[in-house]
View 1 (cartoon, rainbow, N blue to C red):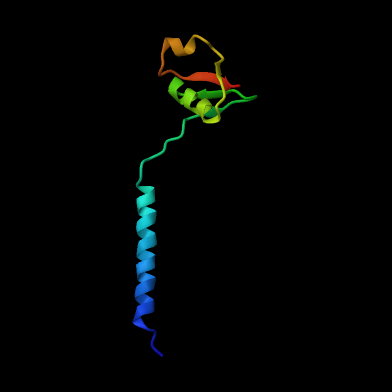
View 2 (cartoon, rainbow, N blue to C red):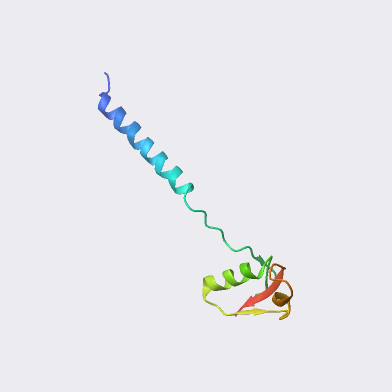
Amino acid sequence: MRRPMRCTSSFFFGFALAATLLVAGCASVPRTAPRVVFLADGVFKSPTTQDAEAYCRNFGAPMRYLDPEAPARAPGAEVTYRCD
């Protein structure tokens, strides 16, 4: 027995639509997460102050640098901090 052509074409259309949506979703605006290294006892390390602020902002937690002069020395320098 032969299958109807309509079933095969609707399967192909559904597969093509799903593949197109998957590719479109992956190619959309990239979302980068802040780069964070978990040290110990709630202490974090980030390569820049911007990454550190973005990470603490995700939780709405206030941020406290362990070395208060570190962000003033070089905004692009590595910092250690806590999100309290």
